[in-house]
Image (tube, rainbow, N blue to C red; front, top):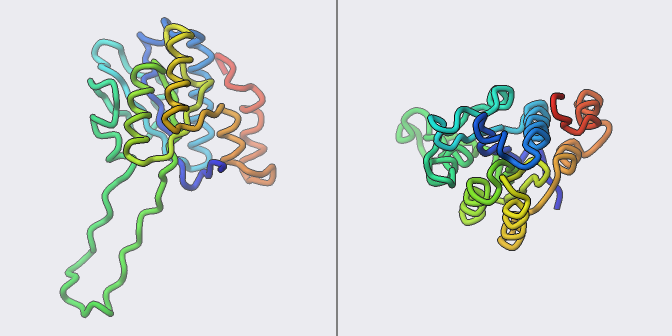
Length: 207
């Protein structure tokens, strides 16, 4: 099973200015999160951010925040409890006009919003906010893809324990390049030549 850009959404969890200096390999992890967001925006994949207790931990990295359509401020560690699920799965549109004014056979069927049930997720800390958000999304029957090289914790042990638990719960563990090239699918994709230099840099810090 490969990722499809048309059915994907990207969630970036808590890359906050006061948290990232304490994160293992934090600069590289943040750079790959920015790369993911850039690729997603170019391929019209919705990008959402979250911030844990921003009054204490600060806002997300400014460049990353600018690439997100919306950023959810939260106090729960898991963002689903604060309404992320409603962003990812919006309610169907109500019928326009007075449906009773026409016979049923003349009423136009409402167009269903295209399903984007594949959630590509990355963030910090992997064993706390990322883990709890991802597990709740799995419970809500989303397909969850965790971008391992764009996730971290203060320690490697906690990060790796989170990956083990997520894999056991049914999440797919992927890398930034896996996601990007699966969204592109072909070197003939119109965005391939534009994105290739970014992918070759690999989300290098400062890129």
